[in-house]
Amino acid sequence: MRVLDLRESRIDESETISWIKNIKRLKDVIETSRIEKRPGIMVAFDMEDVPSAIRLAEELSAADGNFAIKIGRPLEMQTGKEVISKVRDATDIPIVYDGKIADIPYISAKIAEIAYDAGADAVIMHAFVGADVVREVVNLGMGDVITVIEMTHPGSVEYLGHFSEKLIRKTSEIGVDGVVLPATRPERVSALSGLLNSGSIDSDSETYIISPGIHAQGAEPGDAIANGSDYEVVGRAIYQSEYPKESAEQIYRQAISRWGGV
Ligand code: 3DU
Image (cartoon, rainbow, N blue to C red):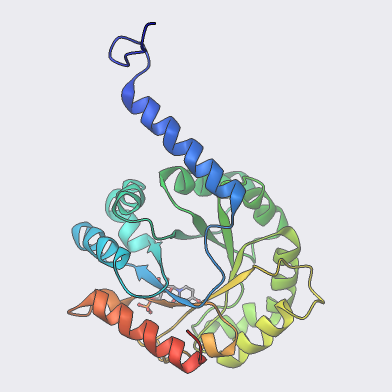
C-alpha cells in the first residue's frame, strides 16, 4: 500500500492546514454560537502595540474568569487583518472584531467575511444602517453577529435613543447573536434587556448583551451585568494598567460579586 506523502503530492502542506482549520471553524459555527451567554468580561484590545496585544491574549488564556477579546480599529489598523489571525493563534478565547460595520450590504458582508476568515468568532456592526445590511451579514453564517443598539456617549441619546427599541426588535427577528447596550446608562440596559427577554420580541433565548463603559467612561464593574447584561466591555482600565491580566481578573471578580453569582 502506498502512503500519501504530502511532499510528493501536489497538495501544498500549508493549504492542507488551512483547509483543516476552515473545516474546524465551520464545525464550530454550525454547532454553537461562539460566545456563551454567561457573565464575563470582554477585553477591548484598542492598544496600538501588537506585541503587547499578543502577550495579553496569551495571558488571558490562563486568567481566572470568563473572558472574550474585542479587537478594535486602533489595533487592527496597525497591521490589518493579520492582527486578528495573530491573536487567534495566541488564544482559544472568543474573538470579536469590532469594525462597527455600517456600509451597504455587499461591503458590510465583505468586511465581515474578511474578519471571520482571519479568525474572528463574531463581528460588531451598526443596526441603524437597516435590516437589509444586518440580514446580509447574518446570512453569511460564518460566525456571530452583534449589533450596536445604543452607545455610551451622550450623543447616542439624541438619535439612537429614539430608535433603540425598534432596532433591538428588528435585529433580533433577523437572528443576531448579540447586542450592544451602554453600561453608562444601566437603566437602559435594564429596560432593553427586559424587552429582549419579555417574549414580545422574536429573539433567541441565547442572545447575549455586551456593555462598554466600565471605568474609563465612568461606569463601575457590575453596573451592566447586575442589570441584565452578559459581558462588560473593558479596554483602557485593563490594557493601560501595569498588570493587565490581574486587572482583568479583579474587574471580573467585582462584576460577578455585584451580580451576586459565580
Ligand atoms: O472605554 P474603554 O477603554 O473601556 O473602551 C471601550 C470599548 O468599547 C472601545 O473599544 C469602544 O470602541 C467600545 N464601545 C464603546 O466604548 C461604546 C459603545 O457604545 C460601543 C463600543
